[in-house]
Image (cartoon, rainbow, N blue to C red; front, top):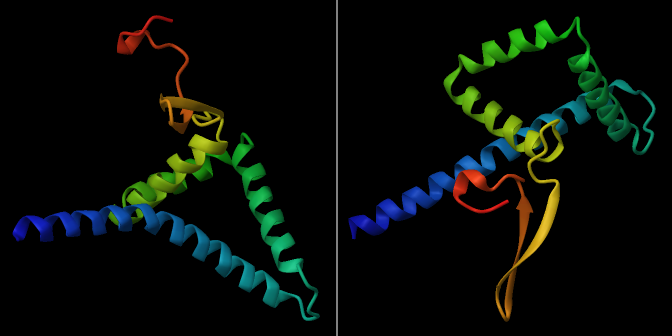
Amino acid sequence: MAFTYKRILSYFLRGLLFLTPLAVTVYVIYAIFIFLDGLIPVPIPGIGILMVLALITFIGYLASLFFTKPFFEWFERGVFKIPLVNLLYTSIKDLMGAFVGEKKKFSSPVIVQISENLSRLGFITQEDMGNIGEPE
């Protein structure tokens, strides 16, 4: 009986670790949207979304500039010192980096044939298979 409770708790915690970074990201973007949408006195449909996209793009631009990199590195060092925030921030950053970063890890989708009637979607994450004993 205790094994079942431990397993359920383990599944719950895994689900929480998976959903929390996603939920935090969605909440932050939503909060920015509400804030920016409230700055415009005249309601214009879609302007809040455009402003959020422009703000995210501008922050990305600033993060790539030579003279602002020290600020973003300083910010990350501060985030890394806060235990729960560190976990969330690094999880989100790693996930986003895997799909859209400079070192895209999931850019080449493939279909892997498991059996005659079963295939799965996969991603090529590494070109050199020598380190796992496979020929190139």
